[in-house]
Image (cartoon, rainbow over all chains, first blue to last red; front, top):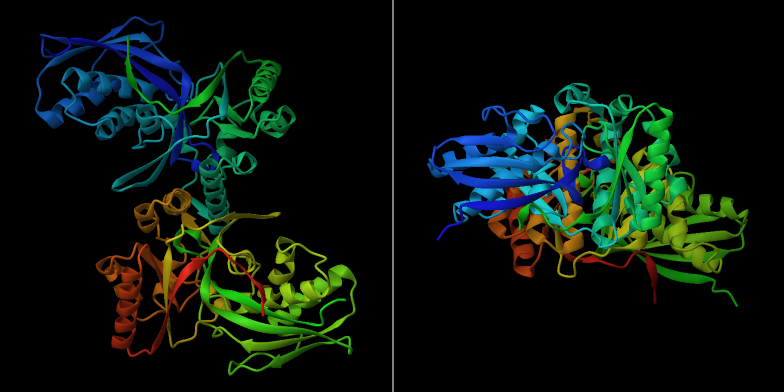
Length: 309
Length: 309
């Protein structure tokens, strides 16, 4: 007998990861979305919002239902589903809020349909939803939200996902200042061309980051967390960012960068004390800049979107 | 009592390694340079060429002696040395001929001076020699020639060398067609700017290559061996290159690219049979293009420049 209702957890994610601009992301243990997915007998996809976040109720404009439409279309399936948002990562916070909605919905629907797809095969459907949030095809939040761990999208055409286990003691500090940056707006600021010299800096750093992650070389991870493409232009949209980045070494954190397109800022540490100090620093600098901020400290998660009871 | 003469082996190296343009290189077990380094009582650096290769005898123009000058200057040392070239990798073949001369000389002199420097500390001196060969500061041949294994130069300013052990069963096929391409000339063809889209392709591939090397994911290594910066312009200088690249999958090789600035071409394989077939393919295509070629098949080496008896 098939289940008619499941409860799903989808983790927040940090995309870009410095030199991994558009190509990398990783999952956090917390925060995350909780979504209940239920079959209904209307044949419609209905959005029910039990959170205080502002979520589009029109299924054609909601990233979760758009992802589900893509999945159902691939199957030629006409079953209806209720997507009930119970807990929502703050939209616009730059820690993969839309990605979590997309992956929670497709994992829930896939489960209720008795798993016609593997977890990895759900990625293209979640990317369809993510597209309407960001205005561009990218997987650097949806892939880690779906699969957990550290993700490299080696190529988009065809998509080639490389999943790495994160080192066990890698802890992420995220601070979300109380301003909104729309991904689609922020993306327009990125230049279309760059010098080969800059491109090689980016290549050196993403390669260093990969080597650091796979060999648990924490100092190398820290030295590699620089982005020459998006960071310089996006930093200007986040009051206090440059001070946080410059002073991060005082906390013992390995390094940090902008989470996604911002405004959240993240740091990676190899011990809880540094992770905590990084959070205090971020909060202090944002306060000085006149901004409230919310700090999350979480281990990097090896788990992606999954059923919970 | 200090030694007055040492015999040194310095391995051939493959630099660039596809997406690792200007940032990566690895050492081969064979071929390599053999150099005898001897103290002399003249206070001069003298070049003695016992090979059939054309090697500058003027110490101000020879990469080996220029490297030694830099080392001696750092020490304020006035000892004279003879640098006796016994076996020489073909100059201009694109497998690190000048780099091997540089590292053989500095390792030999360092040994005769009772090792004032660690092996890694010799790198800047060898780079000084390499500079006069290529007209640019780069370490993607000298670093693997010196240290062995797979090398990433994460950053040049200050220099940050990451050394990876290569997977044990990685075999390199190199074919050197009988044409010369000067590194300094070839470098002028590289564009100064590129699109962010292309830069991200390069980033995805170098990150994939690093992940493949560190996790022994051979298929990933193969998928990642593409270079959007130098390969397109340099390919045009190597008759048959595009055919070799396109047909490499027929041999079972993982993938391949141009070695250094060419004209040599390399392929990586995870078994001797594919490595051999790749060599046959390269030789056949070059023959069809009217070029003699010399094929080398060698394991990737974890050893760099070293004393031999």
